Every structure is written in structure tokens, then in C-alpha cells.
Amino acid sequence: MKNDRETSYKIYIAVQNELVAAYNDLRDREFNRLFPNESMSFVEANKKYSDPRTSSDEKERLKPKLDEVKLMFPQKLSEAEPSKTN
Image: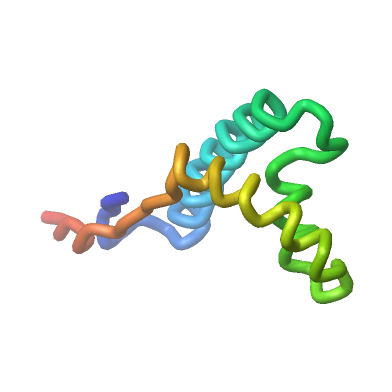
């Protein structure tokens, strides 16, 4: 992701949020295709996995599924040095 030094923070965050949402859409679609018997999306499963109240058995069950989808769509966003404005 590359921005201009004069890009507002609001615009910068909006673009970053759109990119993350696109990854989540792809991951949700694949998660539902690969694991149709799960009653949740990738995002919901990931949230459940991260929840400290979730049992270790449930985390063990979810981890390989989440990892498989993350391997298919690794979220690799990088930021380039901002452009100088003239």
C-alpha cells in the first residue's frame, strides 16, 4: 500500500479496512466451501479461536481449518514509503 504524505488518516484507514475486508470475504468463501458443515464463517471461527473462553478441544479442532484457509489467502499487506507531494 502506498500513500501520499497529504493523504488524510481517515482515507488511509478506510483503504486499509477495505483491503482487510476483501481478504475476509475471500477467506469466508473458501472456509464455507471447504467446511460446509461448520455453522460459522472464517471470521467467526477465527474470533472463536482467539476467544480465551473457547475450550482447548474446540481450538484444536478449528486451528487446522483456519491455517488451511490462511495458507490459501495469506494476508500480506505492506506499506511503502509515502510519496512526496510537489
